[in-house]
Image 1 (cartoon, rainbow, N blue to C red):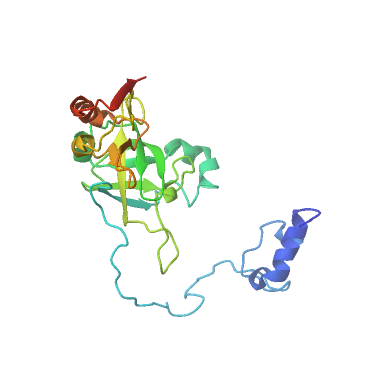
Image 2: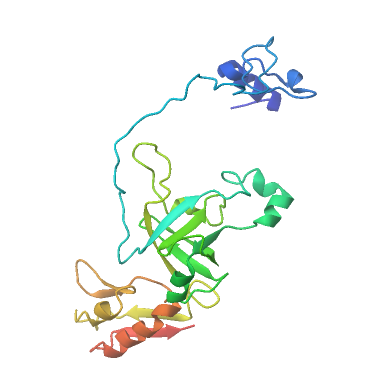
Length: 260
């Protein structure tokens, strides 16, 4: 598409969109012009819903309740709720360029109940990895009782901590589901994980399964070979002791523990 300037783009919008039909660059000078403005003689609409809704009475649709497509389980034990905060709007393309609004909330965080944070040994301001069945992100933690135990909250305004990476679209609205995602979180001293890493030597693994029994959060079986493998590149601090125990009890010493 080739346009000489932004005025040409506005002219095309007006030619294609009836509610903008009377809006031109010339008419935008001065106090501006509010839509709907269907033709060049229309003064614009100062209040869209003054005294009554534009369409008349509200239109409601009753639908049958559908249970969540996902629920929490051992692997994804937290309910994720996403939503808005009072400071920002949608994806933040406008509100995040405002110095005063940005200063009030410069970044998105994962809100977690104090008992959950204590159980996972996660501290205020610590960066954690948050994962769902669709993806994962990293975010700092805000420890607060605004959320219930077993529930975590993220605002979706921040590209750096894009909560929609974790969610899925609803079957009816085609919008991101907001409260029906199971997620897990992992913390670590000074970052996503601790300084420990683990590998499994497949030539030594004899399908004993001890490591998977001791630490299923880190070790899994390959469906084909049934040999164990490591699911995480970094071992969260709260799982380090279990990984060390799994390595110690592996009969063929197939697990190798590395520290950065």
